[in-house]
Image (tube, rainbow, N blue to C red; front, side, top):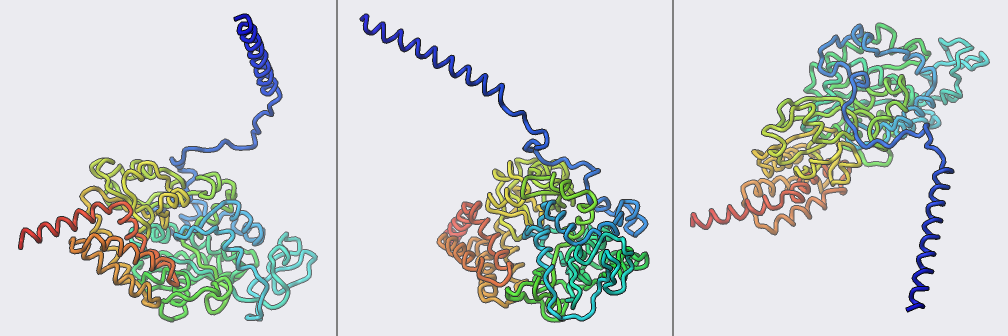
Length: 516
């Protein structure tokens, strides 16, 4: 008993000593802890509610004048000459710092993609289209700049020998079902696109830009041509663009409505007067592109935001959205919503907030939602339970086995026949396949035929696994991504709505037995 009491007292004393040591250590750590670095911004956890002053596209609905006079009032073509004279390295640095990723669907970092063009000349052209002087005053061609201008051939990365022609091709062949953002830019803000072509071309030291516009976009092409003519007349493009000593031309090329021409190499083939069929890569367009010359193909929205980024700074643009998903984005919202619209919002905005804030919510309320295709017809559909919390950016949608794509949000309520909807998409991709690759040519036909039977319930349950296996054999086995685009909607249907397929097949068998 005495021994036990002694041990207890010793343990109690030890515990008090330990508590005292812990308390003193905590006080010492608190007193000597470094204060928070005010230069490091706090980590953001909420996104959305973009302010009007932060919007890049200020005439997306066409309420104002789309011509040069109206564009100048909205801030377009402001200090463009200064941007050009700072040289391609500065432009590329700002674009990389901005974190801008391609807005056409793939999401490749734009600054990095544009830098692929700046390679040594290969002797395919003897005449330089860029004229500049050394800072010392030694002429390199016929320059409109003074010797004290700060841009030198070294800044511009222009060798003093032979020059290779380079091209920027703008992909305005907007054919993805549900997507209607690029046409709004060309119709309401065409000067943003033209100015974007100029600064993007400067980053690549390109000679000209070809805007490949979808054949059905007659009004958009007309507005764009008017804006190009105005820019030439004002000296903003063409020879000695903006008085910078840089020559840059812009041309429009009308397409004929083929969906496959939205693929960059098929688009290049079409401009060259050939059938729009994708090329094997490598060589990539940055090496062998339009007319066999280095070429960069970029989306309309990607090019159009560049001037604003360069004026306001890459850090400003990078301040929107989550890391690796920076900036603002045009979202096209259609389907079963109260107010379908195209709206510019911050990247990483919650999908539910995007729909309820800008579209007045789903018809019949959010509980009436069946599913959403978040990025155009080529990405997998998401059921309501995922749509409740998912963010609208590249990484968040990839994590839920879908994709941002073109950010064309297609909303479907419970009145939608989801099997019929996906069957219609399969028929679309079958029709638009160029037929060059066997997996796509044959696979899209099989997908469309099987989905037509699934729509009526005239299939067996084991065929669900069969069509999924078929889609996996198409995915990743074609020259371009049309095979993937055809496979993913079917995969999304099976992943989230398999019970609907099974119930439909069971109902058909039951009705067939009753008839017999």
